[in-house]
Length: 75
Image (tube, rainbow, N blue to C red; front, side):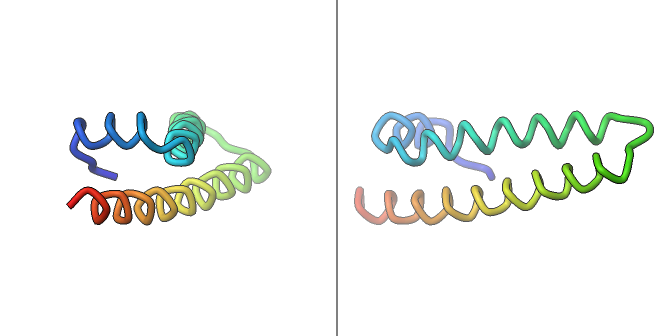
């Protein structure tokens, strides 16, 4: 998700829900990246990676909705 850094800082300051979602999204992003760096991955790890990817996408969708609503409210 590409967000203007100033807008990201402002919405994180103003919106507690967005701040929490962003933190969780970042954590999942790092977990997925760690799986991607592994040379060999077990079927269980692959399932966990897929689960994290789905959660991350869901969080992104929720953050985009909040961001859209936020931008509408400040204009």
